Length: 490
Image (tube, rainbow, N blue to C red; front, side, top):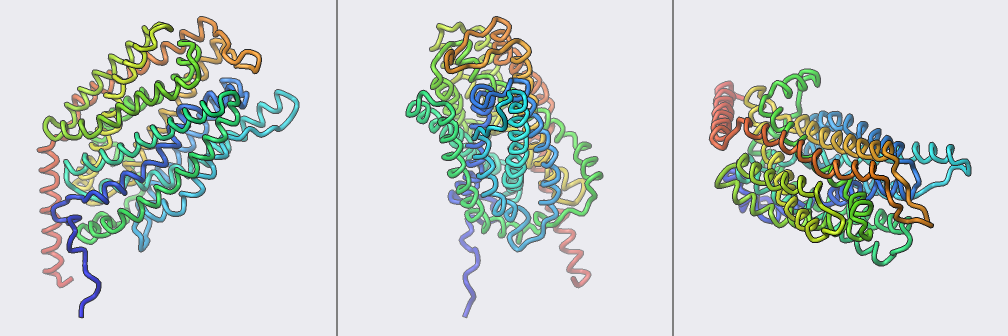
């Protein structure tokens, strides 16, 4: 009599490192909920705080910056703790399971408008501290579910091209979540056209509910594969014993990691600057109805999603760097073009949004496909798998970028004299100084960041051939250890 059958039909077979479709779909779903909340936050939180909650732009920028700085600070903490977690469910999954529901609850609480006092100044500070506290709590649980999830990439396969494919699924769901969020926002803005407070409350409630469930799909759909890989490659589940200070020193002495960090930083600074300013660009510069905000963002994200698998296929032929060059070049052209768009050139605006989507797609795909290769190089040097610390710094930088970009835009808008909407004047005519801030924030600033990313990508050292050599050396080391253990009678 035999026990329940082993994972024989592991086409899942870790030996050939290929992943089946169900595992890729489940892994991709793990980024759906966080993508929905991230897109809603990027697209709507600033105008919600300034135009609905009534915070002045400087306070609205500061509350988001404080939340994101704390969020970024807790990333390395969660990364290190998840690296050290010991559980029958692995290192990453307990964090995702227990963090999912608080993640949804605190996302919803960002979209209510409490009243603290009839005194305007007191109420402003009450709102500031409320939104700051909720931002800290929401972003903390965002990290708790998202950071361990991102670290799963290197624990599901060690194949160079399969990781790019895996990230294609991840970012298909990520961009799909962004598109779903924008569609929800568009539909609600059309169904409830004259009540912006109710619009945001409905968006927050609906997106909070649908953001939690995919996290559990990811957990239950990838656990079997992760366990099989852990059994074949026990080093992927070893807890990290190097002290955190030494870990940071080793991470930042890893030259390819610094290039990936720089590439990611530049790409996402451009993404965050553009997404943060689009609501103001559409309403104040283009003088278009509010529903165009979602439509423009849909044009970008829809194109990015449709191009993910195209870029993934091209990268197998020409490599990750070449794909990044192609996408960034198109994106730079789009950002530069948006600076020159006139208010009556609506069709051109949408064409440039589509063109930008080609580049945004590579910003999602390429840096995250490079990072697992860097982790293997680190393992070759240190003898330990430390996905958590590397992924935590990538997410750390993404959040710092968002906080700085949003704060920069809102501070400049406030200093330039931004006029808040009122029930009597829902779309006020902004002074020229505000319009200039909007145009520079959507054109030259993101384009400059993208050009820096291109330069860094040119010098990125890990090619497909170098990665194959790293894996070969790791395999030889493991075989030598295995022989040594058998020789010692272990």
